[in-house]
Image (tube, rainbow, N blue to C red; front, top):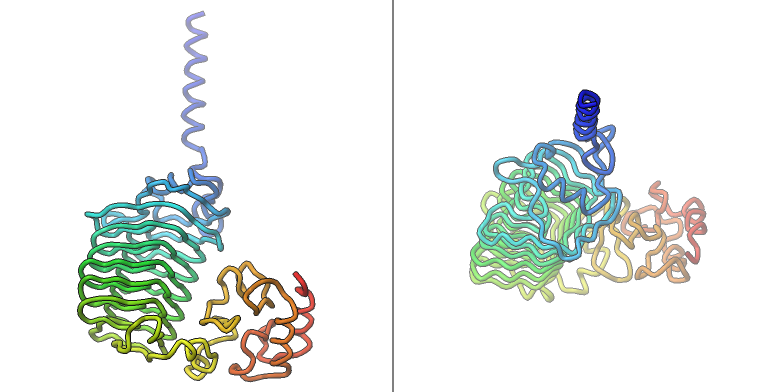
Length: 373
């Protein structure tokens, strides 16, 4: 009897160890490019936070995650950076707090080192740190594409609505619209310090309050390359304050703008200042070569928006909803009619639904499929 019990106990232990060893750590996937780990629940994300051994793997969000005000810590740090890939797949992470007032590399991702974050929406976050503090990424030495950050970000040095320090990283087609507060230097609506990095087709609309120097509506200090970007938020600082960029060293800007009225700033190191009316005029941007066929859209007499944004063409809304957006209706038909048979980007706007460079019956057919939806 004792021997039988011993054998059964041994079998139970082996089975338990086998289940533990081979259990999928997330909601699915294998962590590689062909089969990324699936992040479907808040618990999955909490596992990712503590599983530094997985920070070189590939992940995909399969659902929106509401953290209900929970306190989180960053994914990636100075010891182990995030070198993997996180594809948000258009999903949203919301309502969380990261408070590390004495720490560096603070954000949803603390340190992205050669990794990639893309297609990710982040809203209603409260981020606090010391240096390299960003809404989405504290320090980016990798790639960021089609991402959005919203909330309040505060820190001392290198503080940005999206990224604190863009250290040789690439940021493309991203935007931030939260408040940014910096107590020392390098404070920007999108990026605090663009340190040898590249920023293109991005914008920032949040209010920026710096109590020190190098404060900008888009970037606090530019030591890299910025192209086809704009800023419209209010900007306050003490020294080296600009509507687009506060200060620069060996940095360049091209085809960039800021709103001199809403920012309260008439000067900037880089960029061209425009009135609010000019910032809401399509020709301001098409004359500068901005891509309104694939990258940007300008609906409802508003500032430019990125096509992938939720509620805009290419986002979760209908592609033909060029109005406010509020559904495809008469105002959108008028928009299409005003551009009928146009074949130049300055006239086409967003009406070229099939992307062939001309507004014609093919676009009308796509429009008709979305009518009154």
